Image (cartoon, rainbow, N blue to C red):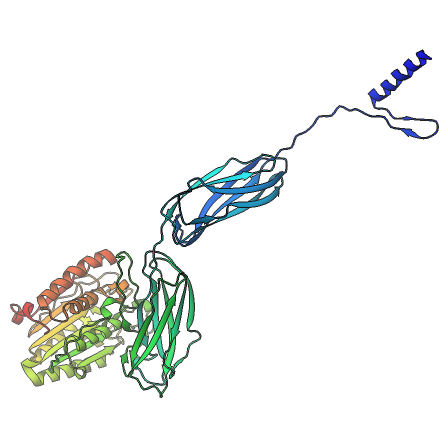
Length: 567
């Protein structure tokens, strides 16, 4: 018996060692424990941070006070195992910066092998944010300790810079110019500008008519402008009218402005007077408001010389003015491209007309403005002024202003003014400059002043009237006699160029600017020196082309013309 027990035990041990299953005769299975040789494969996650970037509203790479920012990054699992319960934790290494708030944790859950997810950390610079350096430490933690290497990001912070949202400029206009009248549409255009040091958020403008007899005509009077950066502008329009029940002399329009903090916007009330004469789309009512930030250019709907035109209440009954602005040549002549037009010439003439009446003391009845004038119209007015001057002799003064194309005869080189209905290929109907001088001199007027914002070389304001003329012609200098002084925009073969930023001819802009600064109390000598110096420098600086104005005078006044004065 002992021998059998030992043998059974050895047999059982052998079966267990080889992992065998033995079935009895009764059909019932007897399962034994098994052992197998196997290798354990370990699959681990591997977390990394990639593609980190900082995003701020004004894109200056600072966290500014009152600004929403973000840190964005990708969390990648480049390992073969699942990253479990992944969390992104954000902390400030330097806790001494006040006014900074951010999301401190983002829960990502499980992150599968060879996958990634984008994470955004919102950051808010509060109004009380201090200036300094924010040192963020970003940790990506996995539940079992398979963390990513920490990331440090340093971002400069800026303390609060106040915005200042204002109505920088405004103009009232009618569709066709003329007087402001009851029951007729009036258009108000304004420029809203942030002239402060910081950004303005959620800017809203609201146009209001405080009088019940004034009616809003447009589609909307409330505008959501969004954010306005430092120096940024928005242009808005408001259409309204006053009914015939309106009894006051002026119509007020309120422009209410708000921004997110309700502290840094300035409301404005604008007024337009009934029976006030407006130039269509071009009458400035208020000026830009000065700012302490000299590097911010105050936006304007027009040039500074178009506003605040000095008023001289002394009128000269025998001072006559003929002012011509020839701009649109393409309209009158088939085959001409619009590029041949003289940019800003009409506006030059319109504003010079205002200076002639308001500043130089010309009675309105003696001031004649021609825009896009034909040969007949120009000759008619020249003849009228000459006859008027001849009736009053030496008491008479003539002011002649012309902005438009000029051309020289290719053979004689004699300079001509070009009416809008005259082709550059046929000067027979053009107006010879010498004839104008002669006509005015023969009137025996005591003084004749001529301003020519035109060139006579075949080019003008960057677009010559004759596109085919590739070689400019140097015009012949006319002999001047009588009591004449002629201010010309350019000399020799130069062009009379525009001043795009000011929407005037370069010559006209500085002519008007000097009249504005001196209120018309300026000698011809000082005016000539000012125009020649400033145009010569600014033309090179702005247009990269030479333009040197000149003054030609009659020998009869050679010794006295510099002391002449408009007052």
